[in-house]
Amino acid sequence: MKELFSGLEQLGFKEIEISDLYGSNKEKKIENTAKETNNKTLIYNATVTCPVCANIFKEKAVKSSSIRIASKDTDFFIRYDLINPYFYDVWICNKCGYSALKTDFPKLRESEVKLVLQNITPKFKNKEYPESYNVDIAIERYKMALINAVYTESKASKKAMLCLKIAWMYRLMDTDNSKEMERNFLKEALTGFEQAYMKEAFPIYGMDSYIMMYIIGELNRRLTNYSMALSWFSNLITSRGVKTNLKELARTQKDLIKEELMLKKKVELNGELLNNENMDLEDVNDNSVEVNQITNNKKSLLNIFKKTN
Image 1: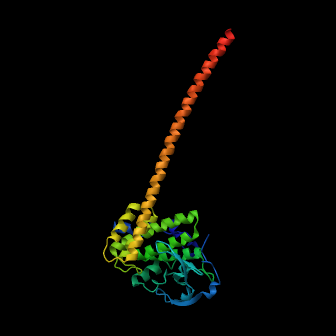
Image 2: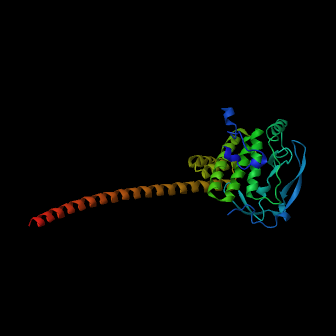
Image 3: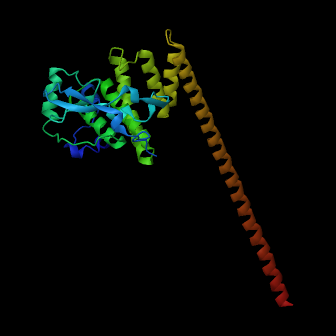
């Protein structure tokens, strides 16, 4: 669990005592600048008021005219040209350390304000960020929002969305270590979305229950939980009121799982055949050794007789 919050040392969180992200124990080549151009012309400074300490500060935001979508992944991750809006999706108060997605930033209950002041502010160290952000900065800021969400005992959906976006950032890095970290955060996102689906009211971050069903199925597929993924996709496909394009997407992912399972079986069968062939070769080699030994023995006997004569 500690590795989920690695990289926050400069912000004052060297030792983090969080063992359970969702509190379930209580209830029982890097695209980090997105084809960087002159980012200063693509962003502006937004004035923000902190709901915790009333501090007024500036946060960078991407101009809507600067957004260029390049492609979309099957878990709704959007890849951008020019500049990546995901990098600027978290706001951090430079005074008290309160951090959240910009859509969630003003939404704070009085009880949550007290938890920020109690658990975040005493440890927080302000950090000056450069004019434009990259993927490493984005991950650091998302993790800062996540640790806020954990300490303020936020809904599972908020923590799940943060985990999903952190996973997306690691996907951009495309290294062996980042792939492992992506998988770790996808697991946490899946856990949170499953809890949110069962306990929270919809819509959740613009998702209705059907879109949530798809996301849960897709995250299971990416984590190779194929039986669970097939179950979620099948339930979605057979549900009434689901939009046609979402059903088609679920069918496509369901077919993809079947193809992956067929490929896995072929690999296993080929492996068994190779093992059998190797066993046969070992038998042949053993027989060859025995034949050679018999032949050598015969030659030895002949040599004896030759010497006797």
